[in-house]
Amino acid sequence: MKEIGFRRLAWANLAYNLGVIAWGAYVRATGSGAGCGEHWPLCNGVPIPRAPAMATLIEFTHRLTSGVALLLVILIALAARRIHPRGHPARLGAALSLGTMILEALLGAGLVLLGLVEDNDSVARAIAMSLHLLNTLLLLGALTLTAWWASGGPRFRLRGQGVLGWTVLAGLAAMMVLGASGAVTALGDTLYPAGSLREGMIQDFSPTAHFLVRLRVLHPLLALGTGGLLLFVSVTAAIARPARSVRLAAISLCVLFVAQLGAGLLNLVLLAPVWMQLVHLLLADLVWIALVLLSASALSARPRESEESSPALA
Image (cartoon, rainbow, N blue to C red; front, side, top):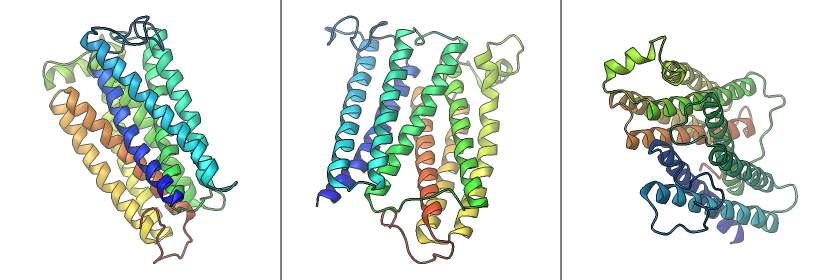
């Protein structure tokens, strides 16, 4: 029973963090990052702001939900050590989750303390946002693996996987590059919104436009290339490891990425409204989770395994 409870908590924590990440994007999209001033962990110099403005309320809510996320990961790390024996992969996943969660909090604090929020359009902010997004993906990956291992998913290995191993690593790396470019693109859309699709395209190719605007054109190109690579990863994994769990993860990845491309196109046509940015980000996170599950399933399955499926995806 304890293991069942831990498994449910791990999956619930993953879902909760998707909400926290979406709210963090809402903070950026609404320009509320300076809602608590340049104070951290205090908000405008006090623990709990009184009669807060809307920007303060948005930022303070994000800090509260992020604090709960940290407490949940600490609880999971302690529970993993108590429930699972030494050497169980769920303990490793929980430890990685805690480490990346702490780094996530430090990166968020750095953005506030260094003033890389609100209308800041510097190179430093673009780099910081990219690093923040990359660590967010690592955090989601660690949370996903923790839930996967807690559900009975076997430990995977990279050595001796041949082409499959390199293909999976290429897919993961491409998704991280795409995610970083998406963070920069979203920042450009927020700080330099276009009045129309035609105006936005003119801005993208203007040599006098801000670098955040000129970089926007790279994201859809990277998305198309990454989509082709992920299709190749899915097909390669399904052929090399014909297990039910691998096929299910491969199909889920392809379906989610197609939905993500559609959301990206709609986001472009609608000129990146806040709600569409959040949908786009949520789908990107789900694509990443599906890729992590496909990687874990494929790299832990036997080459000729065809009928068995792992407990985590059964």
